[in-house]
Length: 233
Length: 49
Image (cartoon, helix red, strand yellow):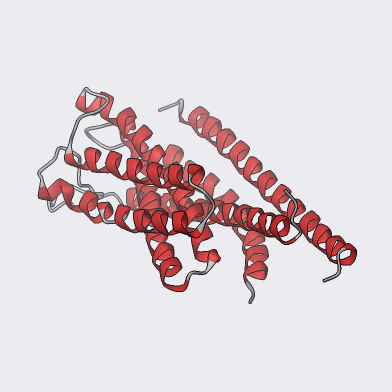
């Protein structure tokens, strides 16, 4: 299957999956899942916050992988995937940084604290913001694309540090998924199921947005090639 | 707890609006792509070689 055919196929399938998945996820979050005993309804933001974080990490890992392939093969398609994934990853990383303080204010009594995980996450956001600035304001030549690829690869190193930071530096951020406490973590099966559905929904949204952005970047590249080939200023 | 249906409705509306916006973006990108293919064809006919 050619890339264009795959794009067309996925462009039909993904919206058909994303729409119902969104509604099911919201229904589970607001109508089905029980409130957490200690935190109450505020904890429900967890079903948006955690999948956003996972999706942002996936997005930045895709930037890393596509950048490696671009440096190795030099094919434009990998560069476009890296750039598109950085943009979509930034959307989800921004969601993480916005939903976190909404939860933190009633639970910690502060919008923000320089906890290791929070600090590492804002560093991640800054690295990929720099990546996007480089892509937006650097020239269109291959040298800039290669610099950006190196930045995209280095940025992903921060992700494993974010994951282990709660244990490594004993921060105050809850480690729900990595909890060793037998009374901690997600004990209610509806909580686990809702988190799974929300994560799958966010994954589908990511894939769809990535597809739309890759197509837009490919069209822009083709217009640029047409300009050059026909010497249109 | 009795306000949850309103929250569900409000979030659903926001998601649906975002969903429709992305669908419209995708459609416009497809239309631009078709126009681009037509432009390519007409340019190759006008400027052979």
